[in-house]
Length: 236
Length: 236
DNA sequence: TAGATTGTTAATCGATTAACAATC
DNA sequence: TAGATTGTTAATCGATTAACAATC
Image 1 (cartoon, rainbow over the protein chains, first blue to last red):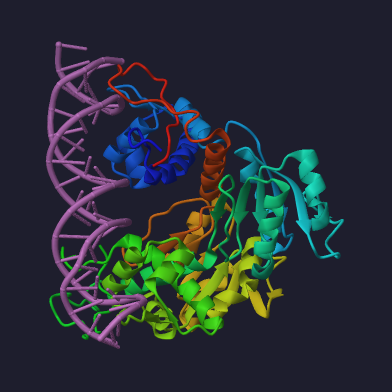
Image 2 (image 1 turned 180 degrees about the vertical axis):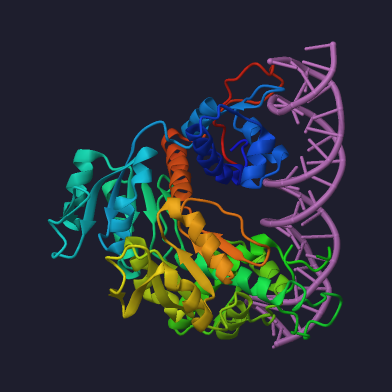
């Protein structure tokens, strides 16, 4: 809000990466790490690493580096992992069940406490001990169990409706796997996983590698506006 | 490579979004769109929209806007969607099967032509008419069918090994769903879907909303280095 | 024509990198 | 102490925004 003392959004996106690698280091029993090591592993310049930690107030020790355990703890705190985040999965199809089975979420404090679906054939069944309930029970369930995050894994056509419903029940976090955007109130956080955008980005890279950067390169000088031939230049 | 005439990487990440919304417009039978409309829908400034299209050589018409169909076609071409990209799914677990069933990929020219697994109980079964084969058949399969993209949906511990195998067989595109990074040769394109990074980013946002930006705000002035209290400032 | 909206350059803003004094 | 590596500022680089002439 103020213009000073802000932390870069770009830096925030790197925090989970730091966290992941720190957890690997800790598992390996390594107690300290330098910005150079961290940078090398994550393909981030040491300067950026130090700048990030400085901005987030995570301090190390000159001539020594950073303490793996406490750095991890601090980053975890910044990322909101110093508490259990409860999740419900809306949509008990293959994707929803795959996520429910993904044990590593729980290790990081993200706990699936419920699954919901519209399909009467699925209701009453269980995944990993978690009963699949009717979506009509969600409001009541949230009132009882305080859901932090609703994971939306229903087909695209239902996604927006489901998002609206969970928001209306007071859930403040949405993790959306359906290829739709939706508007939410100010106080609701949304994170999208867009499979097809990722896939298109991959095929772009693939095409670039295939053709070589310069094969389709065209200069962009003072030619007339009606020359519409310049398509697909190199990548910075 | 040259310093001039480069296209921003930031712009590339927006192309799939433009593409997605253009396909919605086309389905609605809308034939033209302005940078203002596009920007409003995707929360991108009109200026950025025009700048992107200019950089990619996608031209519109002054006083009119952009032709939905041809713009979509051009962006599709830039993204490498003017051809069928063949995919195989490595790992026929829930996630792999969920992706195999995701029909919208096929609509965009990404065709799943094979599934592979290590589990002998799965081998021989079929998903959506696609037979699950032993991973040992992958090399031969690639030689016969020219696989563009290998989708890695095996458990984390096997992911790196699988990536190495598909690369050694000559596959040039990897879409990785396991929470591991890996090194690949120059000419191989990789795109990662990191569930847990996305989830951590969500819990960060959630925490920010919960506490309010300024609640944990700390100034960052000329205090001594040993004052280690500044954690979690506002977001730019 | 008048109105609209692009194409394109220049100005601004933010993020990355470089550099080095501080200090463990 | 000497060596290492941070903390922190300043310089550079890239991406976004603003502005408006061009022109449909």
